[in-house]
Image (cartoon, rainbow, N blue to C red; front, top):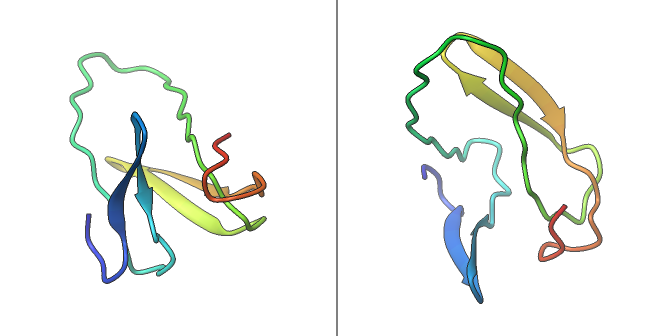
Length: 77
């Protein structure tokens, strides 16, 4: 995790990335893809806002998406 406010939080048995409010903050995961193909990206998020843009990048591929209002930061969808 890179940034000034972003941090790992835990609620019960579920960890999440919280305080991700600064567009300059970022998170990176390392993964190894052993076979070429088409993959689906699933994001479980909690948000009080609609239409906040975010970007997922894997290699040279970029996916632009937007948040949806889930009714609160701890309501995951």
